Image (tube, rainbow over all chains, first blue to last red; front, side, top):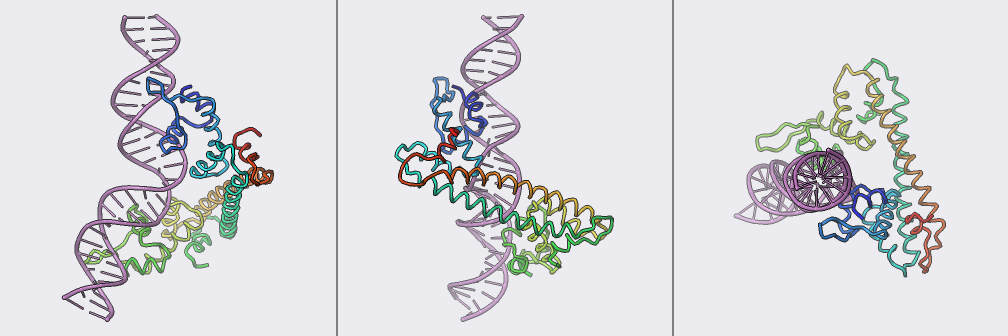
Length: 129
Length: 129
DNA sequence: ATAAACCTTCCAGCTGCTGGAAGCTCAAGG
DNA sequence: CCTTGAGCTTCCAGCAGCTGGAAGGTTTAT
């Protein structure tokens, strides 16, 4: 099938699919006219990458996950290790954002927000607080 | 003072300070030898940007905040509006990550993680769940 | 006098796409 | 049969926000 159809089935834009090919993540057959040609199996791999990206895995991690996906003799512990690393990253990111949120909320809460120039937010950013 | 000293005082790497100048965020005087020359006031502005970036503001937002910082006649409502927008963004990001975390945690929790190949994480990514 | 530590500019690269231009191919309608 | 439009191809550029490195000038300390 053409890239347009593979795009619809996998949920990835054609541009992204070409990009993934360029960086060697997903390959494709070619027809005589030069068009890319995808099988159902290819589409499943594309879909797999789509889901993994949506779950926060980097392209490099997708590469690892894809090779585990392909490996009939994989050990699930390997997959789990990657996922747990990612989970940790996500948790750290959440903690970081939560702390940011707290700081920013604190500044916002103390700003009266009227037409006067004195502003605890500006002062906080200036480090005067 | 030289860029190295300004870097130490503001907490921004010299490279970043030059970059901020290149994009017109922070200017600097020049000495006869071509070296950049920073005043204490410049350093305060650099520090301000540093803090704002750390709090999650984009460079463009820093530009706005800097001009409000400079504006003696600013209305604090303007600052507050920008900060509230950012706060909303941070909250949305946290919600998104929390949902990611939930999905990923669900997959991880169901993976026995041993030497066998069957793996709910791979299956989940493949969309077979 | 020389070496180390600064400073300068410029160019490239990181992640992960996305947009656009120029050009080829294919399917359908008149 | 011709044309039109959709879909495909490649290549180049750009987004954010730096960061690394090369090649070279300056300053400072020994």
